[in-house]
Image (cartoon, rainbow, N blue to C red):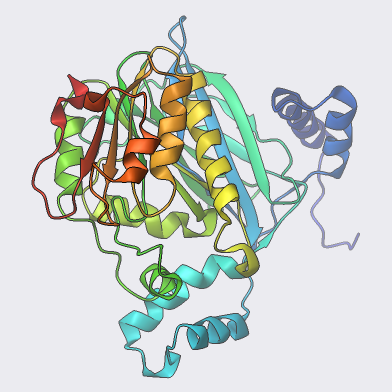
Length: 383
């Protein structure tokens, strides 16, 4: 250690390692694993970042809040050759793009250059609460997840929200430079009872054209995101029912989380929790059908388990396997699913062989096909 290095008292380090061990145990690690994780864990470096997914929080019987926190820890890298190769595949010339289009392309591809960071820890402070917790050390995929019970914040949060009490806001703190090195996050407070709308994103609320790979990539990386007609207005109407919450589900990787979050806000969809695939690479940018199915079923089953008294509305599209996934969920939990709504982007129609086979045995009033050019919406699903 050089003479210029600042002296560090061992007490804060011991306290941090104790907190890390506790967080690791809360995350499900065995005691020995927790100790090993503590020994390897380090705080974030100045060039490393934490991205928090929008998660959920639930009130406890004693008036506290149980909060789920999901973070991705990474370091940005610049591999411009990848951008050039992708642009060439899409038939784009980066030099010929307008400044706005080039900026959009660079922003949406930026996190695909990032390197996930392993064995990193970050503290989390909750706004309006004295609580501070230390997240478990990040894994090889850079992910760190924690479920923690805290006292309900003393002050309303997210005051710009129509219902500011519906959110818990927090920030990550990374060490001595914490005032300059913070990352924001928030969690949706979901009451024990009410209706949860689980909504797909691509081709359900956003025009993506998933069935055409080149168009999908263009719409994802090069073009402005375009909202599906009338969907935002329909969702806002659903949101007027008290204790309704939205959970956005997609097989898109978490590298697209910032862009998708901006889209939901800018297109005036109700805010909600976001459930994307794990961080990925260019090679696994487009998931296989089975990977997408397992991801969506896993999220849906987790939400059903975590909120056992709530009713659910499942909204998707016909471009991929949403009808089949939702029908499977209905058959497994017939008393929990109020309705299934499918936006028909394949032109099959309600009487098609696919829909009749998929929804066989389900009361016809419980599943709905919405054509892209229709103005009707089954708002009675929340009655």
